[in-house]
Each structure stands twice: as structure tokens, then as C-alpha cells.
Image 1 (cartoon, rainbow, N blue to C red):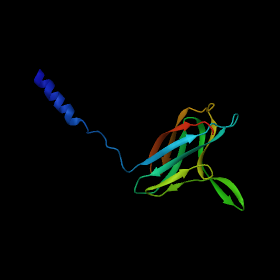
Image 2: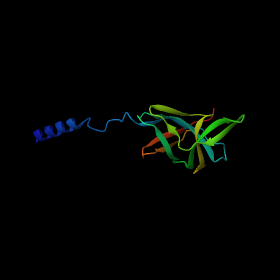
Image 3: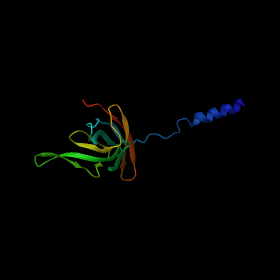
Length: 145
């Protein structure tokens, strides 16, 4: 009996470390956050860094969250002497590059919240890319200031 237990332990030890290794070629969301929307507002913005660690360009296809009905990529642009905000469809991120989402630049506009959003809460962001790859990341709701 002890011999059988010893063999079982050796087999288990042999399988240790045989799990899936992290993929060095992936897409990573870093430091995703949002400020609570103004009371009564149904619009907010998510800021983050989206890092393409793959050897090919990626194209953002669809974005959704657990807190709202719709999410769009938007970009502030300077045009005709004015700052304007436009939806950026099919955002492409080159291989081994990062895209910064920040106030005054690219950002994710969030529309039609399912419930009130408060500082200190957290929700999930899902970004899907052409070709079927997707990434999920937590988004922290930070207090203004």
C-alpha cells in the first residue's frame, strides 16, 4: 500500500509544472480605470494602456462591459481651430506597440449604465479583436481628484 502511495506521489510531482505556460505573444490591458459619471449622467470614459505584445497588428472589433449597454472607442482631434471628439472605428495597434487611452486622446466612451457607478467599485471590460482574440480586464472606478 505504501509503495502504491509512493508511486502516486511521484506521478503527481512529475506532472507539476506541466500546466499551460503564459503566452508571451498576447494583448494586455494595463491600469484600466474610470471616474464615476456626473450624477444623473449616463456617459463615462475608461482610460488605460492597451499593449499589443504579438508579432502582428491587431484591430479592435468590439468592446463591452458588465456595467453598460454600449462602449465605443473615441478620439479627440484638433480640427478647424477646435477640439472635437469622434468615434474611432476599427482601431489598429501595430505589432509590439502600445495604445494609450487618456483624457484628450483616445478613450473608451461608456453609454447607458445598468446601475449607478460609484468610486471604489470594479467591473469587467472585454475587448474583442479581428481574428477572434479577446482580452478581459478589471476596471477600477476611482474617485475624482
